[in-house]
Image 1 (cartoon, one colour):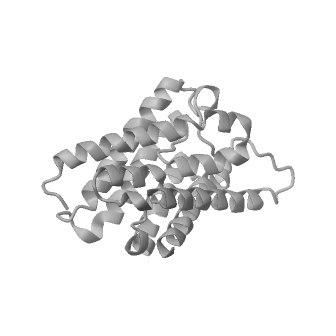
Image 2 (image 1 turned 45 degrees about the vertical axis):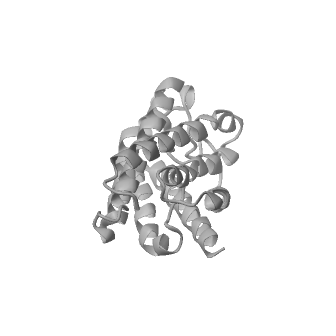
Image 3 (image 1 turned 90 degrees about the vertical axis):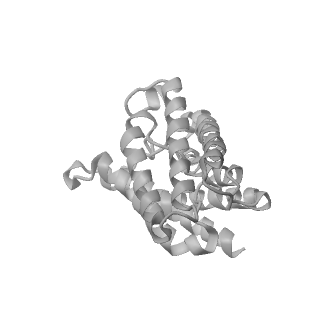
Length: 228
């Protein structure tokens, strides 16, 4: 139960910090945060939680990460569904807090609410296939970073830094394409509030990250210098 509470809190923080920076700070150009600032915000949420709850739950904060770690032989199958449930609920709670904050402004309109999308809902107008490939590849690389940085032969205390910076880089690459998911819990939490178009496209932001995570788990299991 402590692990599940930690995953709930960590995913709440990821959504509130990452999506909050996009919905709040990035909506005011004079603050100068832009999409670079949003990318850093997502990376910082993972970096801070890695050191806050990594020793409690492993700091997955993402159903794709839990699945990739399971495929890679680093996570027990019996904990998979409880972790995913805690992550999704934590993400929804974070989005709910964000919605409560932003709806307190006069003239508030929900807009995209930092939801993920493709086609007309892609920030750069990219197609569904572009979004699919982007999310698979970015999640694949994210899991390769996680599996490598947390390996017993890797420098133990640098894992959180590598993973947080890795997520920042992923956002710098893919925000223009999909607004960057690589995390079904993050996508679900925003889609619920953004409305029909977001929930209609949500399937891609579950399928693609999971496919990318499974591929990474298989590949890293082959590359890994030894079983753990």
